[in-house]
Length: 234
Image (cartoon, rainbow, N blue to C red):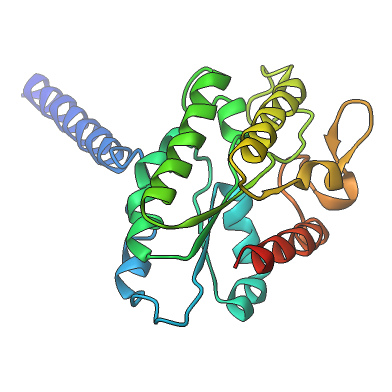
């Protein structure tokens, strides 16, 4: 009698483990994060004829911006579409849902940190840069203006300490984005130069708590730069 009971416990444990794995796996199927703002997007009406809708496309830096300085977005009518941890590959997947379908006049794109931190795959600058170009081309095809911004400085990534040359890769990617923006007459906002410090090209400690994400003071610096660019572009 004891052996069958033990077997039953084993089966029950295995069943629970499988169900737990299936649930977690189902949650991870939304690789692009299309469900993150699905409800907000449905509730957002199409812009009126005089509305100059602006969307901020980004990762946790953009998501944290909206959470830290909500009034910057609310007072200016800006829409934040940042998803923590995302790379440019995921931006591209949700670009239609979180940008094109919302019919903005302009999109601000901030990308690169999580590509270089290798959140989704080994870093390849050519692929990341290609994803940025694809987003620009999608925006232009839908008559949406674009502002490209620099990747913020970071000397290291706390969640992936194996990346030792992140600072060099950020500089290289920023140079390429800046050159592309100039060649294609796209406004480029350089957060990097305003927020970098030291020979290790780190994010200024006055503007961050973890070396990657801006604090309130850091976002204030970014706002002073991007607001001017948006007003000029519109």
